[in-house]
Length: 158
Image (cartoon, rainbow, N blue to C red; front, side, top):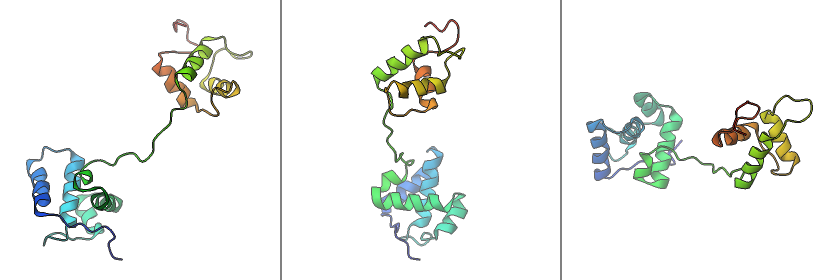
């Protein structure tokens, strides 16, 4: 199957990659990507290896080799030397007003039949009060941790 993302480095790019490896001071992922690109370079005699051959010689997965090739072709030389950026952007479930409501709720007495608030109870109550459409217990926990609140613990400062 022919390669979709072909690596053809300029002389200056090749020298920069060799310099990264020669100094040995760069981050491990940067050195690893430099090795991958040098071995994948079709413009040089010792390059142009298959992804499987590169993966075995650099001790990475074939998917890593494919990803570095793709990033080089689509985003450029410097991007190929960096770590992969996260693809997702997370929207916050709770704004400042919602956080304030959560903290206030956690400071109140727990519902009847419960000795203290649990993360699940707090999450369910936020949905019931229509503060948010849905929320996970981990979001509740991290929000309370961030505000240094500890529901149910005596001396929580509430």
